[in-house]
Length: 160
Image (cartoon, rainbow, N blue to C red; front, side):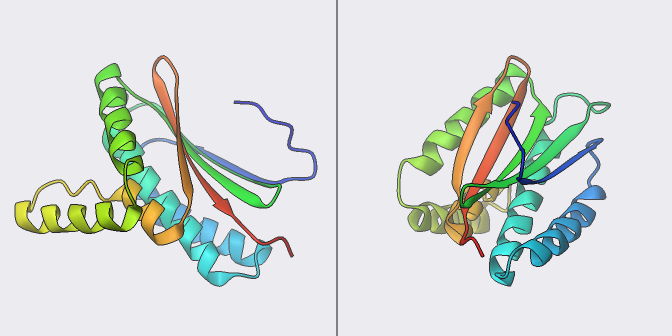
């Protein structure tokens, strides 16, 4: 996905799917946005979303030797956080269903329902994407390729 980035703030990171990188990426993005945004809360929301998206990407990435890509572009009053990873067709279908569920109703009711389900089952919580919608108000978008997925979390921001 190529875009014209002249004059935009842009960060791109590529690395292998390792759990130990998640906290490093989160701290880096939080610091990066604390410099560029006057809104500390928004910077924390963006870095939390990156963390959640990276966890999903690592959990569902199809190839251990592959690379994950994290890209952040700031333009036109929004920050577009994208996490891209290779995925098998069955995982892509799971993600499509998840997007349909979390987009079907108001974020708070879905989030509370998922929290209740996680507490009862003690199993997989499936809270990541709905947490981003509920806690940050970001708009989520799924872009599917033949063997990869890109999840966008788009955050409206106030330009300073």
